[in-house]
Structure formats: structure tokens, C-alpha cells
Image (cartoon, rainbow, N blue to C red):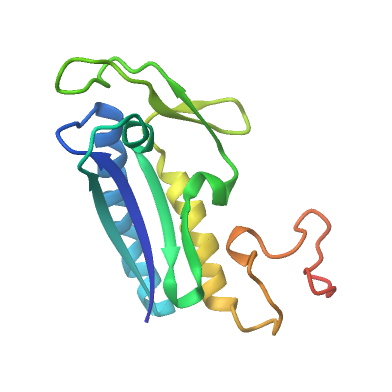
Length: 166
């Protein structure tokens, strides 16, 4: 069974509302999708990664969700890179260290201009389906599909990277 791992990064002793909402959404998503992936011989696993040090880099990494599938050599990748969503940082009322110092929260901007601090379920769905598709079709084309998890071939042109028509 191939394993797709979604990891949510947080920082010790901090639980801002957007981070908490992202984790809850991720858990609900995995609970609903796991039974649908099982017949495809895919197991969905969640990890909550709690960073111990409260550094600027750790705070900027808070609320990052990554996806990986070691069986397919899909390295741990932030889902925004996989689904091509922009990330920025914006003020967040509840984002503060235990000492009361406010910090900016990761903010996701979709192609339509909508922004989210709590990651919406459709982002998890799109990233997971891309990797699941790769799991189902990894050896089907016989070519080197390192980019299959982020879209195999030129979808706009309807061609496969190895020159065959889709």
C-alpha cells in the first residue's frame, strides 16, 4: 500500500485560530477521503509537526501543510507549491507568541484573488488527488514523470511530456 503523508507544521505553545482551523479541516478531510483511497491501495496519513524553537523562521513556517509519498519518490513539498497557490504574510489578530508579540500569519491567495489564513479543504483535495493520480499512473506511461504529481505534461496543450497525445 502506498502512503501519502500530509504534515501540518505548528510552533510549540502557539495555537492561533487559523492554524487550529487548518488542522481541524485537515483531520476532517483525511477522515472522509481515506476510505475512498483505500480501494486504490493508498493510505492517507496525517502528521502534526510541532517546532520547538520559537524563531522567526519557525513562526513563518507555522500553518504550513506539506505532502509527500516516499513510495513514489515525491519529496516533502508544501502544498501551495504543488497546486500553484501564492503565499504571503498578513496581520492576524490571534497570532501572538506567549509573550504577547504579534506575528504575521501565512496567507494563501488563490488565482481569483481570494485570500485565506486557514487553509481550505479544496487545497488538500487538489494536492492529494495529484499525488494519488501519480500513484495510480506512475508506471503506466513508461517515461520519467518526476513532474506528474504537479501535473503530467502540458495540460493546456493536451500532450504528455513524452510526446503522446492525451
